[in-house]
Length: 199
Image 1 (tube, rainbow, N blue to C red):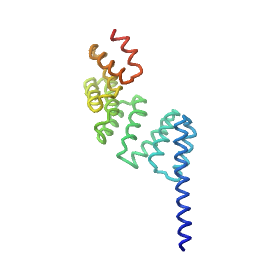
Image 2: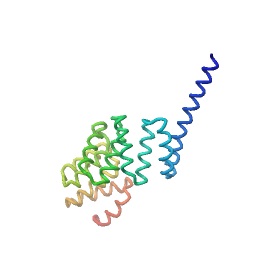
Image 3: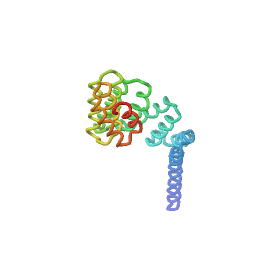
Image 4: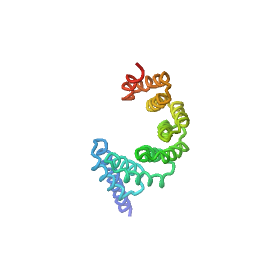
């Protein structure tokens, strides 16, 4: 009897390890930029564990890299259904789907949902600002960028986005200050914009 128990335990342990390996294989493919292979590995793993949040999220990210945004969105929504407090899933829905699709109302909606879960998320504040700016709600956009910077003084995209809004508002001096900060924090196109507006 004891030997039977040990054999069952070892079998379950081995089966569990095989499942984990399939997820790890997907992670390795993803890191190497082999997104089709990553999707296949995650899909195989999800046949065994259909609600495994990490694999769903990573498969969604791999779908995004392949330009299969509807499939990515389906994975992110499944995560939200299984784990309604998952900030990363809300952010992915916000930025990688609705903002990219130029659906700015839904971008604001999902950014707000993200911020209800984590009010100190600079990415969500910045995406909300960008969406408001596209909608022509410039005061709301400025408030969102200011909120992003107040929670993370080293978030380059918030400075860059606020600078572009200030350029639009003809606040060139303040825009150049933001651009200098964005450049110092590594924003890749800040130098080009500085050359155009701050010389």
